Length: 599
Image (cartoon, rainbow, N blue to C red; front, side, top):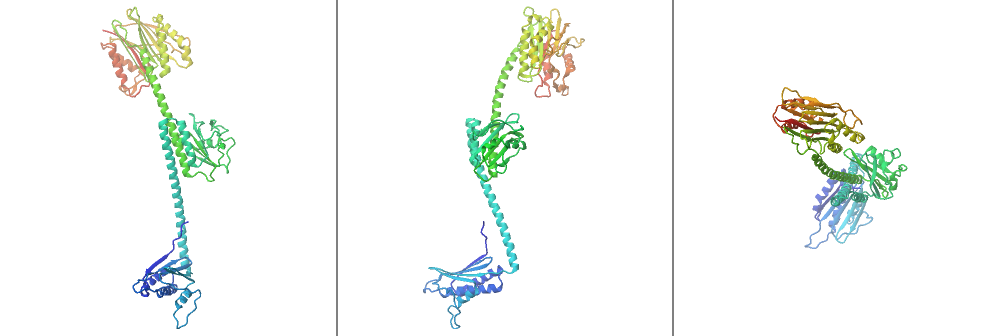
């Protein structure tokens, strides 16, 4: 409690009667300023003057000695006034009950007058100084009493405000100290984590540091699984705590303190003396009077929940301690996220490396050079939307008869690794079935029989097209399994572009599909294009950011067919058309084969 500041006055002057007149007048002015009337001021003036006269009277000095000054000190209290007269004279004996001296005697008259004017008086005589104490009770007029009451009430209000400010400053100081402790611990353990990288050990040490800061006796930290419905114990202060996974959404756990905190996404502070925990609640093992539960949320994601119990304190956790708890919890959650992302980056790096290897392997399965067929050139390309592709093409020529060529193109449903595996199996089966090259439909049936169980087991299928070309006899046999049609035309501008797509379901759809085989004559100046649906379904700026489509592809083929160039020139023209895409990344693989007759 702050001491009340009350009015006071002090004046000092030479030990001389004439020198006392002005100081005593100033004392009267001081009293008048604080509501004393003329009668009171006059009485005090006479009493003080008599006291000063007595001090001067008893001042005995040598001829060359300078007297010490006299001082007057006035203190105004709500119900009395006290005046002190200090002197450095030899002093005198103060009579307890002085009587009025005779009219012919002056000795003792001043002391008598003083005692008549005040309610209490005393004279303290010392070795080097003396003090005259005068006290008079005070009765204020009613209007002054009211004014004084107002001022006293105002002083009490100010005093109360100052006390609140003191409390706020103390709380701030406590919070700053707690923040310092928490930041110090975080910095220390954060440095250790950077050196050791053991996040589990880091969490244990960090949270054990939280116990003394919060004045707690235990903690339990749980993290959410991927679905967010199960919280698993990650760190704890005691093996007595139930460490079993908790399904906070289950009927038998909905009323547990941790579950409630997760549902409302807010802190819960429970005084277990006033409100008991539900039977079976894991936090009962804290055996604590106060339990605070904090759900840890980063962004919108629930990371986990931190619970702290205190049995030693009769007061709940302060706001500063709660803030420290939040700081520790969120710092730890961020470290868990960072470690998880770092592990994901490492794993992603491994997968990326493996995919690069798979990409190289798959690229090695595609034709690295084209067979030399007299009078013809061949070209092809596979642009993948991912590291590995489900598209495949192959060009196989007859070892003893180079005028016979097998063109194969396929598209496995889906993308990435699963599709690339089936594409590799498809290639192996085709290359191991040379006896059926001249009969594409039979070859396609064999491929379906061999792959049906594996494809149907994972709900996948393959569209494919096989064209066997006998260029000496100028014939071509085609089989199609749900694939894009083969485009055929001639250098002769009078011949239109024709599309050929014999009936047939994709491989893996039915066990014994009906696959047709179409035989056509090969015109002079032959131009053949086989492709996957990624070609016609690409969006290109050259056609106003619309799908290229079958019709536009046919128009392009018709426009370039008369060019007297090799297949590689046709390839460059088609790649230019496909490169003008409005998208940064392909949505689907793009694969094509070109067979062009020279001259």
